[in-house]
Length: 164
Image (cartoon, rainbow, N blue to C red; front, side, top):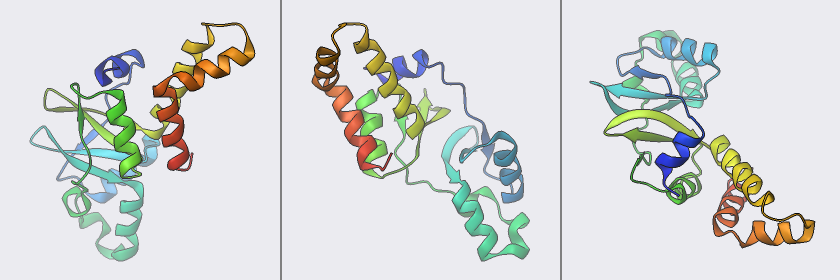
């Protein structure tokens, strides 16, 4: 399954992103109000990296007096897998499993669209199981179909590997 089809199917809204010049205080306020664990950072309208809540908390602990002077560029994580409309759902699974990351940026035509998360992987599993659920009525046969679907197997193994 193409990742673009899945993102369209789940109607994943565009994720808020912030300019690289934003202060950590501004980022923290946004994350608190929106309930975000991660936020994407853009430089000149292009995806530059991500900042997680843990990075901001470390910034506070390391330098509480200069917290509001630090900018996104100071704690930006740039070495993250980035997925595009050309990737498959299997690529998302691999990206979340490989680095045990919790969010992977999804970019469409070079522009940041959203962060795909472990929660999206759980939703994918739910969708796959619901899709297979309608195929047969027999409980034992349903279990066999779930496990016969290689994508279901891969999602379940990845969720297990990352501790969900």
